[in-house]
Length: 422
Image (cartoon, rainbow, N blue to C red):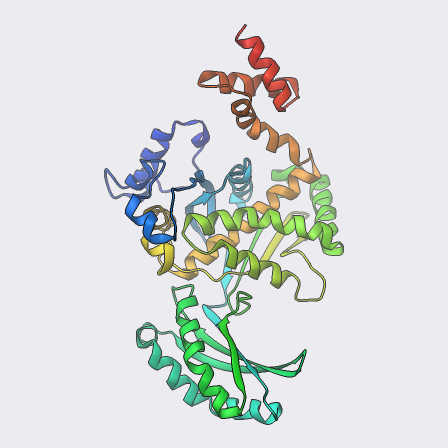
């Protein structure tokens, strides 16, 4: 492509072959650059058998591209793996509507990961807490010796914290090892440190160690994104007001906040999955972070600017990596990172946060205007046609007929298919 832009008008209407051609130009590595996508079951047998136990096959999930995205001044294409209709369309539409204001701006708190060591039966926990804090330099040397490569990369042990909690049998000491894991998610590194250090700490304080494992509440890896949508781009001042009212519902009601945040994670988890990262860890961390105040709350905030436009922001913990685990060995995950230009965990995290905010905007606007089902079901119509038995050209014809009638359901699809076939 002569101009590197994520504004790919008409991309959704192209054949998959033509989309892959555009993607090859984007990557700019010549023919075969998108070879991992040529087969829809892109994992070879031997890799499947090594990735999990008792492997019997694969469960493919559709992989699509979010277009129109500008993140920190750079046009980017973002792969998303999801089975849900309208998720990717919502991000593309949302990103297009804020391009005139510069797209998404982000910030990154860093790549600090927490490992927890549980210490029990400590007779004098307050004194023991100070003992551990006093020996922070010894803990640093111990941990850094376990992973010297991480230290060479600029990471390694950063700090220690000790919390005293009330357990079922008295005070429980919880030691936090705070480790900079750089471009790795870091689970293996910090878990190894915690397991090896635990008996040492137990000996120092005269107790016993039990659990030694990382925390998925990655509140030292907070990523923030914000954007402004001009009122004229989203339907005018009335739409701004209705979206603000819809967002406020999530602030005051945890029942609504759960669905509000689920919509955010539709986008976040789709990028996390596409890049071979741990979707369960990210989901757990996000929802725990949303509940830290004592009431489950939305991960986003929405406001009206001085000139009447809509401003949105998100804060979310993202423990992501570009090395290690499935990210390192899965060919599609590697290609996804290449498409994004995500050459660091920081850059990946910034893009994921931007997608989460975009997804939330799309859901709020749909809910505050036409309702969520109109757009979702229109995109879901072809799936319903397939469920009813349509094949080939019949799928599009039945889907379009359902959309024209306003009745998008399997019963209507079955009737229309019967009529079409005479």
